[in-house]
Length: 414
Image (cartoon, rainbow, N blue to C red):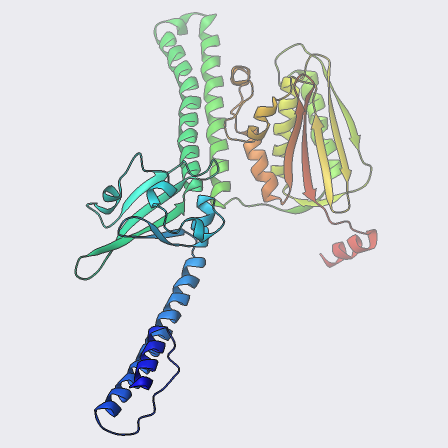
């Protein structure tokens, strides 16, 4: 009896290793055997529970969502690592026993009963108060036994920051497109109505109004073409016609065209004078690019430089090479870009000077397209600017330096 009592105490304390020697088949012997079997069964059950707990801990720790579990009073009993990170705590002990309403800072909006009682199997709440950096979707679901008794609740925290930002960008994009198209369409309609009311017969007004309609139509066509280009880039269907090009010669060729444009005043429509100061290496720098798309990038940047440079301004174009990149830069002496706007310069439809840009026929998509093209070419584009002193746009493209012999071998193989 003493041995039986001692073994049962060990089992109660979690020690299942001991066994009672059965010396007879009487009532005490049968009781000792039953306790031995109980000890084995309890040990196996405990090992199974520990294994399941380790598996659960492993699953929770590797989940891409935060997970909290509560008891039936709403106090937290389990929290995985991602939930700790989202809630800004360093250890699970800081959450255990705390009310989930307090830890999620939703007590002033919901009660625990509100979260538990839902017409659906879950209840979703958007949390934008946990951090300035993330927005979280909290999904609550009751833990219910087969009998229907609710023993607690599981809360899954999912970071939806990217989805919210994408939705906001989509809404902003639709709004911008609508606005940008509405302006020229309104103008076209007004002039067409005026022409229909008799202005078409006026030898002075008729041609002017028709020219405005043509200009506004061209502007809308340019915008649609730009939008289609961006759409193809977003979808990953843009095809690059890559070839090795001496970028020094190509850059000079593009700048030669702008020298002619400036002389003929085809960009600005004003009497202002400009000049292009070139600092381009004499080395032959063979870079693998799509010449047409790269020309479009330089055209976009140069057009902006010409438009916003002051009378008598100098546009400085540079080209140099490093060990594994070629660096192009185009600097103007215009009004510059405010510091707060620098990070938006390559956003779609973004303009620093909206009224002036629209007046000069810009679509607000040129720099966005330039960034996408440079990214497709494996390069980088960025801008430095000081208000009142001008802006400098930089383009860095990957470049593998060839020795003359290596280049000749490649040409022969081709």
